[in-house]
Image (cartoon, rainbow, N blue to C red; front, side):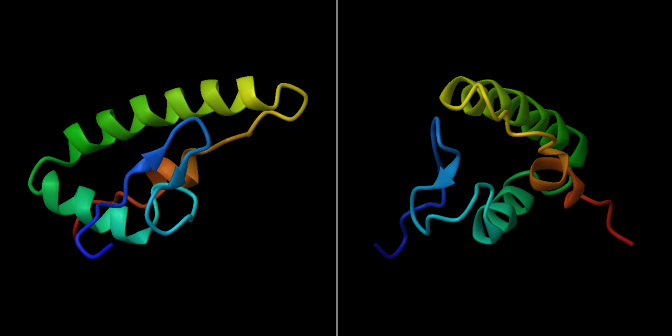
Length: 81
């Protein structure tokens, strides 16, 4: 499994490699590297993924929607100090 990327397993939104809720720590680091210098594009990309995750998780469990996934998908992307 070395080198295998930390990608989301849809529609569960768990990491295919480590099983943690996606984006897991390694996925976050990889995204920061991939979008280095363009945090606005990263935020737009993550917002789209968050919307997709909410839709898919709601379909999986309509009686208990996932709630606010903002922290999981967006709050960790901060401008460098």
